[in-house]
Length: 130
Image 1: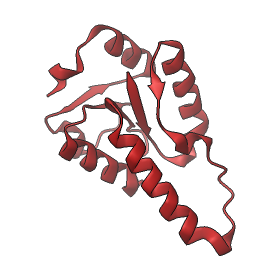
Image 2: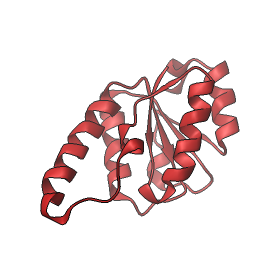
Image 3: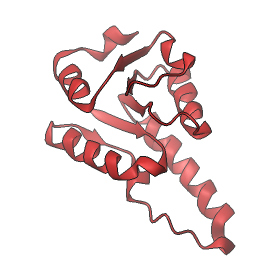
């Protein structure tokens, strides 16, 4: 399955672990942002950020499923990604124990841990999320 992972850059080390665990389970993670160098030249900041946003939205729209790390809710871009996924009918799975009210909308499945996520992906048809 093609998966896009939405999370705060502050949790990037954990998301790299999630990516590896998803890959080992046979999934393809499309989140190219995980490979970004986080040091951006100030002179190229606007151009770099615009290119990354465009790339991230393309990655997400190619995904069969969007995984959202719900533990850091102060990241506005994550909520934009959730909205785009909902509008496009891409199933969303929130992973964590800290949920905003948006995470209770139809089309979103909630699990507590990466282990629970992997079990769910191995056993469920994502069509049932909607």
